[in-house]
Length: 175
Image (cartoon, rainbow, N blue to C red; front, side, top):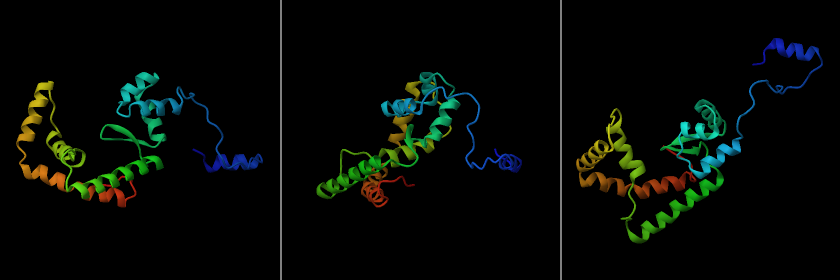
């Protein structure tokens, strides 16, 4: 951090450069391109997995991801702000789904799992810990069986509204 004293010393020595000089410290152990390539190959990799591959600490990977503007959404690393190509792809997909929905009336082969099913399920899972795959499977089966048809119907019926929201937000994230 540059203080007034540092600026005074610089100016006194006829150094009128306003940019900070390069700092000492440990050099980067990997290039951002390496991290970006790993995420392109599999955006669901965890911090420990990425750290192991890049042979650095998780905190180093976390800082670089933050520096690259990446955040984790639904267990996938995505840009905090979508790239233009991602916005276009998202926008185009939603427009196609809207057109298809208008033609067919509804989409029986699409489950609104991301925003309806899993969000609701997450509330029930908040503080649960499972000791086996079978225990988790049993809980999921029981949770699904506890929901009536109107729960699933409601999730399907709000899909077109969600697509319209994506289209009207130009494909950007929204809450």
